[in-house]
Image (cartoon, rainbow, N blue to C red):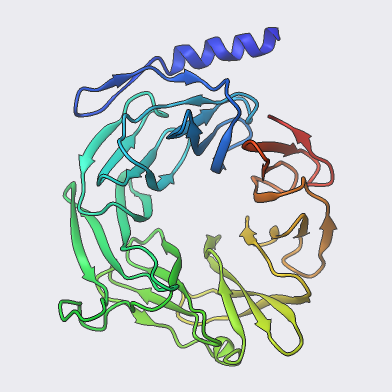
Length: 363
C-alpha cells in the first residue's frame, strides 16, 4: 500500500496537467476504475502507453511502474480515438475522429493539437537525424473487406497528400494507385525515410500482397514475391512487418481449405525489400490471432488461449499457456513480457519475467 502511494505521488507530480494549442487544460487522473484497454505498448520494463476507456470515453493512459499503476493523460480530444503511434516513452501521436491529431514530446504532460485532413488511419513516424518524419495511411473505412486509402506525409510541418489511392467510380487516383481492394494490415517505413511497405489482406485465395515505395510514399508498386505465388490457392492472412538489424521480417499464414490447417511462414528480406525468401515455417491446426516479431531470434504466435514462441529464429518452438482470453501480448526481450486479456467487465493485464512460462496479474 505504501509503495502504491509513493508511485501515485510520483505520477501526480510528473503529470500535473496537459495543454494543447487551443489552450485547453485538464488534470491527469489516477486510474481507479476497472480498466478496459484495447491496446497497450510497453517501451521498456517500466514505461508504457495504453489506449482504452475511462467512464465511457476514449483515453490515453501511461504507466511508469511496469503496468501496475496507470493514469489517464488527457488530450482533451473530442470523439473516438482512431489512430495512434508511440515512438518512445516521451513521444506519442493520437488521432481523433473529428480530424484532430495530438502530439506530445514529454510523456503526455503537454499536448499540441493540429487540425488534419484525415480522421482515421495508420500513423508512422521515425526520428531521422533529430528530425521527425511522419506518414499517415488515411483509411475511408472498411466495405466488405475492402479499405480505400490515401497517403499523407508531414512536409514542413504540414500534412500533404502525396498519393491518392483507388476509389470506386473515381478518376482522381494517382498513376498506378494503391488498390481499393483488401484490408491494409501493416504500414511501415525504413530509417532511410524512402523505403516503405503496405501489407494488404484479401479474402480471395492467393490475393493478399505487398506494396512497396522507394521514394518516400509518392509511388507504390506491388512486389512480385515467388513464394506468395506458390500459395495462390490458399487464404493468406498478413501480419505486421518488422525491420530488425538490417532485415525485414514479414509473418504470414496460409489456410489450406482441403487439409484444414495453417502454414505459418516468416518471410525475410536482406536487401530492403527488393527480394524475399522463407526464413522459417511450420504447420498448425489452429488459426493465429496475432504474430509478433521482437528481433531476429524471438518470435511469438498467439492462438486462442495458447502461445507458441521461438528464441532461435524458428528452428524450434515451445508451447506456452497464457491467461484466458488473451488478445495481445508483448515482450521487450526473451524474458520480460505482458499479456492483455478480456474479461466480462473490462480487461486484465498480466506480466511474465520468465519468458511466458508463468504469469502474474498486474490488474
